Length: 148
Image (tube, rainbow, N blue to C red; front, top):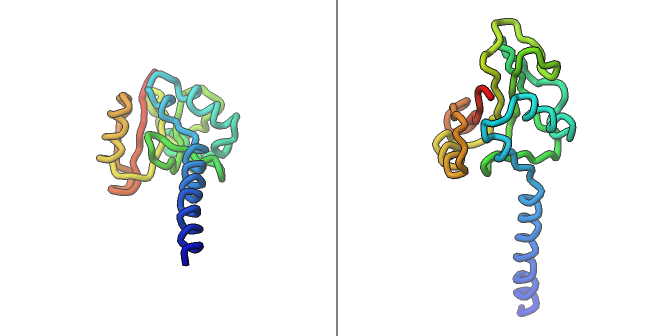
């Protein structure tokens, strides 16, 4: 009996080390969401590092391109899992043109899993003035920057 308790006590911290290693491997985009970059400067490194798919998963009519994180990239923003990365900058070959009038000014950001209230609190604590919008209430929230 004592041996099984000892094994369990050894196993619990080992699990914690495994979980913390997974969190340490997360690629945090917080610093890049300081709203001081251009969409190109935000998206290009993610494409180069193959952290997001090169082909947009969606192109909105206003030309905003949404990119899916690649398997295993483990992108995070302000402590939340990144569901999608998006952006658009006119005349930039990274971005495909939509069917309508392109957005102005240039925009970039992420969609994370989490409520708008929780995400906004985390974004403000980090000192970012990125805009926050509900995508799917209580589930998906956009964190984005307009302009440069």
